[in-house]
Amino acid sequence: MLVPLGVVVVLLSATSIEGKRNCSGFSSPTMSTLQGVPQCHESGDLIFYDEFDEIDLDMWDHEITMAGGGNWEFQVYWNNRSNSYTRDSTLFLKPTLTSDRFGEDFIMNGQFDLWGGQPGDVCTNPQFYGCMRQGSGPNIINPIASARLRTANHFGFTYGKVEARAKMPSGDWIWPAIWLLPLREAYGMWPASGEIDILESRGNRKLTQDGVNVGVEQYGATLQYGLDVQTNEWSKAHWVKNLAEGWDAEFHNYQTEWTPDYMSFSVDGEEIGRITYPEGGMWEHGEFETDWPGLKNPWEGFHKSAPFDREYFLILNVAVGGTGYFSDDFTNEGGKPWINTSPQASLDFWNAKSSWYPTWNPEENNGEQAAMQVDYIKVWAI
Image (cartoon, rainbow, N blue to C red; front, side):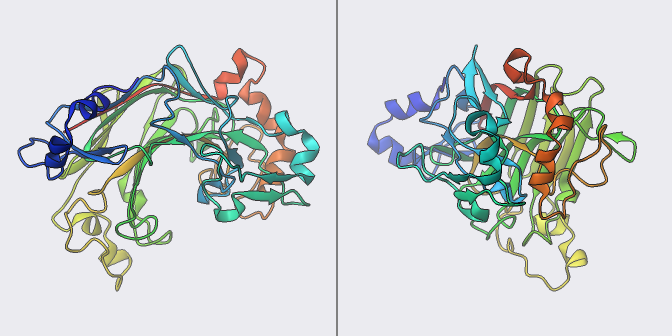
């Protein structure tokens, strides 16, 4: 259910909508767009609320691609009710085996064409052979099917407070996330225009690095920013929180407060990390002058919160594996079945199905242990 913003848009006349575009006279720095119409707000307004009585396709689009999120992840994202559905006002994003639908031989030898002809059936990302792949030798079809939803074409906002009540999945090599990306890349290609990761986790139990649990017992919040992949200074804006029983045991409230002066991340009201923007902005915070001398500041002359001063949209997804997020230094019961530099990482993962798939408990409770479950998402004006 979407509340008050949609109602406000219905009640506003064309003149009053036009008058709100410059936000003069409104108390909040938060701005948003709903279905392409700019909105302005009073502080404390609830500007987005979805409690997932159904998947509202007027607000959320399914991404349809095998691109792997830039990390050669092992899933295909598509619009399929086996992988994205609601029940009892809860959204389930659940990974399954691609072979459940197409068979084992298809993974090795099939051709997967995602170029549909309907508005909700068109491949959304052709990068990295994302729209069509042919299984051949070590280059197999993505062995996992999953879902990724985004509001990019429907709702976006600049500054606000976000709260997502969610339960994390468990199962080896599952990677859930709730995050934000910029609607327009005003400062350049990723990560120059930023990324706000409200939460990311890993589904493995007893996955450790240097003796610390980094699997389902840990979640992280991160800002991504830099000129390119090599200069991304995310490690200076990254925080983690561990919970002995795991973030999959029950629902928790994951919160981000995004203002012109600071960004903070909390869970269940407990702050785990904060950046107060210095006068030199994220360029100063990231120590780019020291780490990357001679580079030009892409945010110079803009607000100190840049690149986090533009309109962003919401994303919910469950990925699996890939060649970045699961370090080769991690220790896992049964071992990690692929290395990140392997040219056949996906095949190595698939060949080890007997070690990881049982941890998903696919035969119990409709396999929903492996699903990220989202009770609601709310966004308020600050």
